[in-house]
Length: 185
Image 1: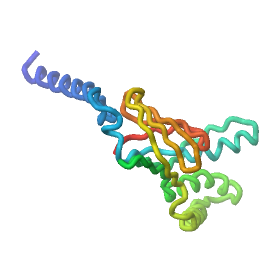
Image 2: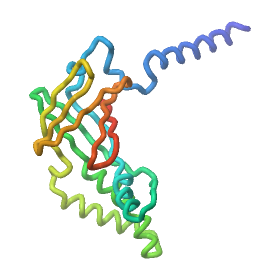
Image 3: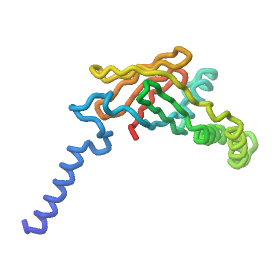
Image 4: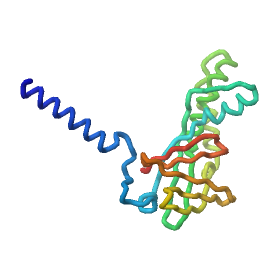
């Protein structure tokens, strides 16, 4: 094997080793040395699958399993030093995702592409939704030993979030009927 090929193979092996050691897409803010309480403050980002939520009720009513193409909006979870948290759904992206869920049905009913109508309706709806809609405030407690966070909303609801070995926060939310996976920003 000539030296050029050896250098190329060595380069490829170095890249493979780099991505293996760095987790290739893993949320690397966590190490074995750090506690969850040391790194969890700040903003966490994730997605809410609006289609899954919308079609779940429709499928239950029709008695069939509907598996729609995902239509997602952004969600945010903020942890503050004073022991409070804010869970927030981005209303603009929620409106767009909701419009994308409704568009195929309005097109079928009217017999032509109604995407522009849905866009207009969703802009109007998004502008009429109060700015604090889609927000939940509360307090949290950290369990560094189990790598969990217990969140209590102002209305008394409680959720437990687990830190995955990949460095994401995950929890199941009953109202939306899905698991949220959030990455630290």
